Structure formats: C-alpha cells, structure tokens
Amino acid sequence: MALDDSYLQYPERSYGMDHKRYHWSMLSDRKAVAWPEQKTLALWINVNLQFYPLNQQGVPFKVPGGMTMPYPDLRHYSLRDYGNRVGLFRVLKALDQYKLKPTFAVNTRLAERTPYLTALLKERGDEILCHGYHMDALHYGGQPREQEAELVKRALGGLRDLSGQSVSGWLSPAKNESEHTPELLVENGIGYFCDWVNDDLPYAFRTESGPLVAMPLSTELDDRFILQNNQHSEASYVEQMQDACDFLIDEASRQGGRILSLTIHPWLLGQPHRIAYLERALAYIAARSEVWSASASEIMDCWQSQQ
Image 1 (cartoon, helix red, strand yellow):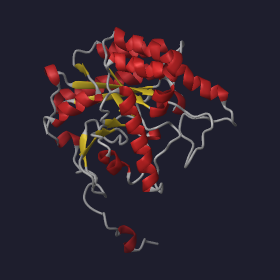
Image 2 (cartoon, helix red, strand yellow):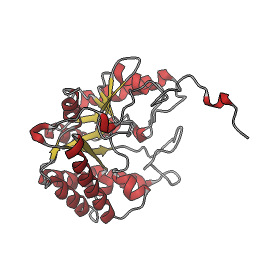
Image 3 (cartoon, one colour):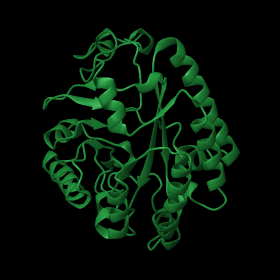
Image 4 (cartoon, helix red, strand yellow):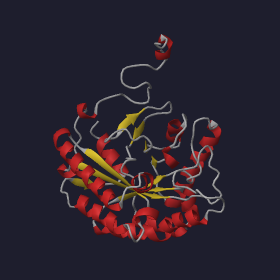
C-alpha cells in the first residue's frame, strides 16, 4: 500500500538539504581553493588528548572509547592514561621527525589534572582546540540549554586560562551535539567546529547567533575508528592513509585544493607495537611535494581568504 502524501510533507523539505544550517553545493562545482606555495593538499593532523572519568556516567550513552567493564574499570582507565604519560611523546617525536604540524584537541579536565602536559603544549606553541570538558561530559539532544551552556562556558573558559591561547576551535566529545550546540559555540567565541564530517573542504555554517565554519575532521581516517571500531590491522591503517593521500592529491590536481585530516589517539598509536606504523604513514605523506602541513586555524584562514 502506498504511503499517504502527508508522509512527504514537512516544513524544511527543499532542494539539497532539509535544513538551513548551510548552503547545499557539490564539492566539484565550487570555486577552486589554492593552498600556499602552490600546494594542493592541506594536511591537518589532529592529536586527541582526552580524559575519561573512572566513574563514567554514560548520559545519555556510553562514550565511544570509554570504560566498558564494571566499576572500577582500571584496565581501560589506565590504558587511556598511558597515552598521556607515554604514547604522546612517541607521537610527538614522529611528528617532529617529519616536520609535520599537529593541532591538539584537548579536554579541559585533562589540562586541569596534568599541568605537565599543559606546560608542554604551551612550550611547543601548537594550536589547541577545545575537545569539551571531558569525554563523559556529552552534548546531546534533549539536554537543557542552560546546562549545556554552562558546560561549554566551563570547558572553554578553563582551557583558555590554562593554555594562554584564544582557543577558537571546538570538537565535541564523541562528535555529538544538541540542537543548541552551534549557537552556544558562537556565543562563546568559537570560529570553527569539527563535528560535521560531510566534506573535504571547510564550509560556512549558519547559526542564530552568527556565522561559524565547519571544518571536516574525517571519522573514516580516525585511528580509533580504523583499528578499534573496524578492527583493521595496523598495516591496513597505513594503506588507508596512503590511499587517501594519493586520491586527494589526484583529485586536487583537477578540481582545486583538498584537506587530508587525520585523528591520532596517543593511547592507540603511541603503543610500542604500533608507533612504527604511524611513522610509516607520516613518512609517506611528508614525502609528497604537494602536501602543506598546517594547523586547523591556518587551513581555515586560508580557505576563508578565498571565499
């Protein structure tokens, strides 16, 4: 039996997208973007520095990558801590070896708890974006607006004070949002956010509080997604990084600049049996003359200057 016509009638139905958050357009039809020094591929390496509480509440859902065993889940808690104590320094050594520029997505609670990490990031001077308050402080539909507003304010205010940076970027824990999150980010001085992964270039994002830029931080090229979620091998991880790099460079040569965005979790790739695979992937990408390694803000600013 055919559905009644009313099933296809709703207020936001329109050509392209069924919402007004951004203007719909085909990537191939947009004005070509040119990166500095005639490079065609902007490399955005996002290093996630996270804090997972031991007494995880899981409201409204258990955060991906979090505790999975009955309290106290010390096995997973200490594994996450390993990344901030040990794994991160292996990752930094690899990045510095190939002269690649990271951007750090930091939970504010981690910055509060680990002054040595905060001091290290300040000394390096790399860009820091806010990864929410901690990994169990989720933003979600149905959350009271006032509660979320206080959470955003607490996360950003604390990280700005501790880092000494203006912190203009945001990545929600689990990339999860409420219907109010974009507006609250703008109201708290955020210029770009990384939760929407539906493009290979930045795009203008509309909010009732003012403009915002969506920076596409790939989930498909996230180490946790590949290794833990999809259960692919480390060798396959390297192949996927290489394939993405090659394809985007080829596409960019015909259609204009693209972004290759990689997310690294030091508690995963900083392990002794995995770090060599990260080094192999970075060496391959760094050897390509078409690659421009830059921070998230540098990529966004370059894109904005051409719009």
